[in-house]
Image 1 (cartoon, helix red, strand yellow):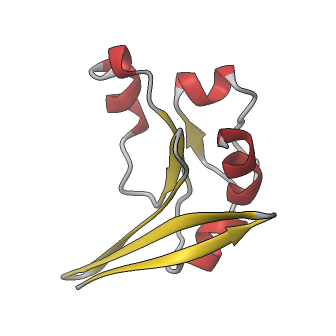
Image 2 (cartoon, rainbow, N blue to C red; image 1 turned 45 degrees about the vertical axis):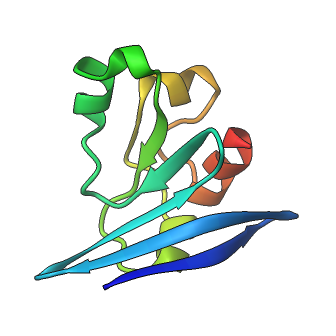
Length: 100
């Protein structure tokens, strides 16, 4: 099942998506410029094989809900996200505010 829901960050309304799969759930919250995602995100792939796309993204591990994704520290970020000042350890909601 796929669920989309509005996510409020500061004064901004973003899009949260939850995809329930067998034995796992994919989570992402996006802005018009980038996104944060659960541990399924392959930051290495985005940096190395898809680097020409300049994807702004961050990965949080061990999260099970969109609320947890907002609050969890990012475990890794893409090179493009780092160029904006988004860093590992930063809470998801702070990264999203920078992505706006």
